[in-house]
Structures are given as C-alpha cells and as structure tokens.
Length: 409
Image (cartoon, one colour):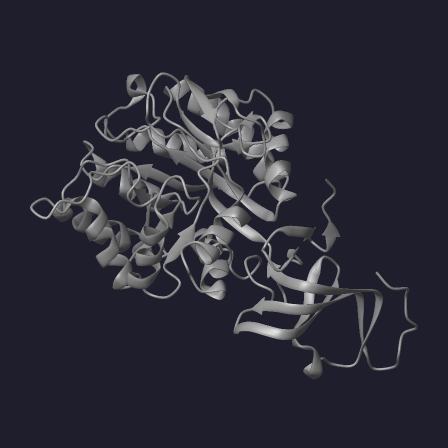
C-alpha cells in the first residue's frame, strides 16, 4: 500500500482506494476503483469516472477484485465442525478457515440430531450471529428422507414438527436463515408455513419425492414467503442432485422439477460445484438452464476443509477423508465437502466453463439475496460492507478484506 495523501478541498476522503479489474454489479470492469471508509464502500466504478478523492492508503492489484463470497451451506472447516463444537471458540475456528480464503459471510449448517442437541448448537451459533461472526444458521434436517439421507443420522430423522421449528427460531434470535426438509415428510407443509413465519427460507432437499411433489412444495413455499415478506420470496433447493432421487425418464423425480422452477425464476438452486459432488458438465447444464442469478454455489464443507486427509466427525457419524473426498467411514455416501467457496467458483469457471461473472455472482450476490441482506453484502457497490477479495489470474486468494480490514492468515 502507498503512503497517505493530503486532503483536497471538496474531494471524497477515503481510508483506502483499491484499483484493479473488478467484478462489479454491472459486470467485469477492466480498470475499476473502490473507495473505502468506515468499513464500507463509498464508491465503486471505472477508475476513469471516479470522483475527486484522497486516500490514506492505496492498493493496486494486477489480478481480479471480487466481492467477498457468501456461503449458504457450510458445516465447518479448519478441523472444527459446527454440528460437533461445544463452544463458540471452536466454531470461530471454522469461520476463520473459510474467511481467510475469501468467504467473508458464512451460514453455519447443522445436521440431523435429536432436539436437545439442536437446541444446544443453535444457542451457541446464535452467539456468533449476534457478534457478526456468521450470517445465519442453516438446519439440515431432521425432517428429511431416510432413503436420501446421505450423511444424515437416520436415528434422528423425524416427521415434521412446526413447534420445534418455532422453538429453534426463538433460540436463534432471528438468525435462523434456512432449513432443509423433504417435501414428502409428514407435516412438511406445516413446517414450510412455520419457517416462513419465523423469517427462514425453506430449502427442499434430502428427498425421495416425485416431480409433482417437488413442484407443489415449491409453489407452497413461494406463496408463504411472499405472504410473510421475510428474507427472500424464493425457496431454495438443498444441493441439487445430491441427496435426491435420481432422474429417470419414467420417474423424473425432484431435480428436474427444481430446475424447471429455477428456469421460471421461482427457486434458487444450491450447487456444490467442487468436482466431487457433481460432474463439471452437470454444473454447466444447471447454469445454462436456470434463470440468470438463480444458482447459488455452496461448499457443504465439513471440518476437513483446509485440513489433511484423515478421520473426522460430522454430527454423530464418523467420516473418512481420502484424496480430499469425505465419505462416511465404512460406506460410500459423500459426507460433505472439503473445498472453500473460492475453490468452487474456480471449478465452475475453469472446469465447467461457467462465465466468470455468473459464477462470482452465484457465490456472492445470489446467496446474499437468499439471506435478504443484499443491501449490505454480496457486491462491490456503494453502501455495502467493504468485503473485497483480491485473487490472482487463476482465482487463488491473495488478500481478503472484510469490513475494509485485512484478514490475517
């Protein structure tokens, strides 16, 4: 960074000016300038159009400037697991692992467990949300399909319980952001209604439902979300294809119905584009079929993200990580991801051929919209928190700023 400048009369006084090619709200700008003060972006746009300004520090970057990434679905990292942590300090270790790799906003995901455990973990995560460490809480289960449970513990999968939803939402103190449930689960409709009432987004997944059942659940969720006018008017699909009945030409299942809904602009599709959960061509097809800005890239990361191969835990289940792939020990079910969200963006662009701007938006502004906080995070625009990710030409992290402050390793 360069030295401070003397203020000029009538100019915008910035604490930091960052210059380089940037993914802004209107696309890729080859020579952009970001002016930052008080932890927020004061101005963003082509450098040639910048207002008169002074800056205490200047940073020139020859790679790319991206908005800080937003992960809607993350179970842990850095050796720590949100479903297994017994203190906020343990949970912060997972947050920091992803933050220093460019995920400046993260939704902490739990897994299916008994009600007592869910209450305990939600209370701990509520503390992190209150402190601004996480952007929300995601409950993955327990109202899911035993047949499509993946790494969910079948002992604690139950019928829908709208009273439990309301109780957990109260414990979360407004931080309950999303909940995964199967449309065919008993009392699923009542759970969807309760989620909308408490300001959480229903996420349909871990399901063995039919195409018709998925379409009906999407329509019901969208109607309830519009009525409550909460975080987002659109439901999401929990990691499309993974944990779902597969597509068959005589039994289309839920995935095609979810794709149809996203093509109509009625649903956001979570996609784990890490090279393990989905083939690159599958990722490409989803982006091609869904309406613009209706795909959210996620990690589904667990404790092994950023860690070596070995033995880990995910809730009550043992997980083996080998060559970066996490599976249930002694089984073949994938047990979460080991990538950071920037790795997922890189895979989408370099392996699946997704347009850079579309991939970046799928990991920033789209998830911010799901959370209902697009006016605060998710894009490099005036008034947003100064979450800026500096990457090299190959989309590897160089420097991460959150609220205008550099995140240390």
